[in-house]
Amino acid sequence: MSEEGSKQYVGNQPKIKEFLKVLATLSTWCGVVLSIIAVLLSQQPQLFTKDPVLWPIMMSFKEYVGVLLPVLGIAQVLEGVLIGTDDLSFLSYSQIGNVILSFAALYVTKSMKMGVHGTWVVFMSFLLSRAIQASIRVFNTKKPWKTIKKA
Image (tube, rainbow, N blue to C red; front, top):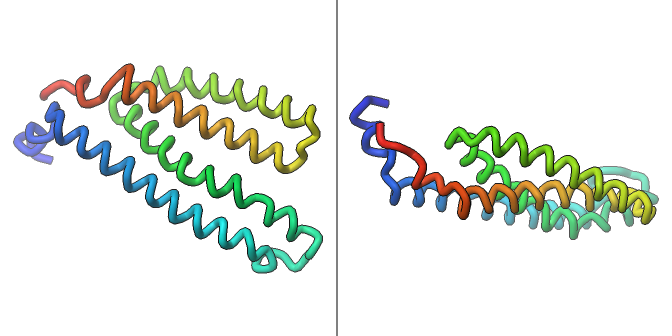
């Protein structure tokens, strides 16, 4: 991008806010569409295995998949914003917290003998933790549209 073109976007708060809004909206809608497809596919387990013993287990995953895919998209967009604004130290420390939370969730689900559903709960806790931490950082603590300096 030319120097003149970069001046047009760097530090331009309304455009940065709009770009973040477009990314978050697009990511959320992609997650919703993928969730719907995944939930519908989870009701047709015979497409994935011929073993009818596994079918009820596979069909029971629809609630987890339906919730997780939109959350995954949002978490990745917000973490991408943190990477783009060079907030890598926060991101790396928050990942340590996410892993610790996942281990705690793993311990609880194992002690409750949740089996494969416990795996989904651990994954859900990991993704929710990522999305919540990144949301707090992006929207409250370090607003990227206020921290980017003009070139």
